[in-house]
Image 1: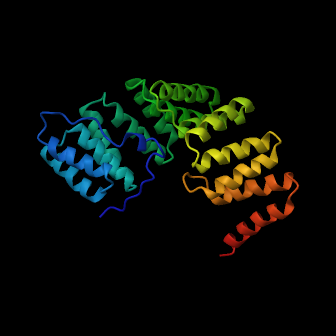
Image 2: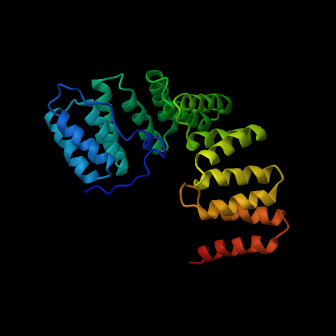
Image 3: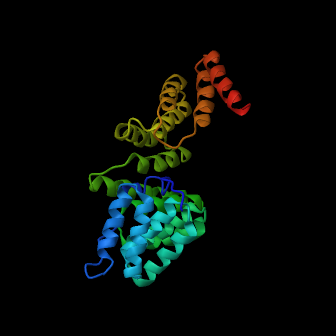
Length: 271
């Protein structure tokens, strides 16, 4: 039995839990639809059984192959996901979502060189898909092309805004890159928009704290850092926040508060 995890594709797959509609003439359509509903309900073992039945009835059902790949990725079975996606793309080379997931399979395995052309192809197939632009930007930045990456981040944000669905997770990578490029005021606008969109996301408050510290405002940086530490939603590790707060409180002239965070880190390390 597969062990399931929900850490697939950071926020990208969460924005697209539902695959495209199954081919109406496929004998596997009913089983696929059942499998997809179970996936959305996070009943992964039941979804896997149903999608395997769909593929038994129609081995070339692209929607079922794509869902099978998502289930495999949720279980960290990237070898299985890759085979399903390659099969899907052989059946339909223009299947944009399957192509995007094919890029995610490489990305999640830290194979940026392989991910880049896959995401580029996904973007060609679905130019209005913000996810494809975002992850192509992430891959491009990882390969040392920040200017090109920023253009892609800007495009991803534009697409989400045009769709009326801006996401904080899309704003933050570009905001971090803007800091590296020294464009602090522009970065702050993006981060504050992310905070407004997701006020309970620790990552957004953490990035705001980092930016404020860089701008020479340690007191407000510390406030944002402390708030970030109280929030559970997001991926920033507690230790990263504690380290930031040590610096912020030291620079704000409150060494006792900095020492308290240092003590927390030491206590964790001694366990």
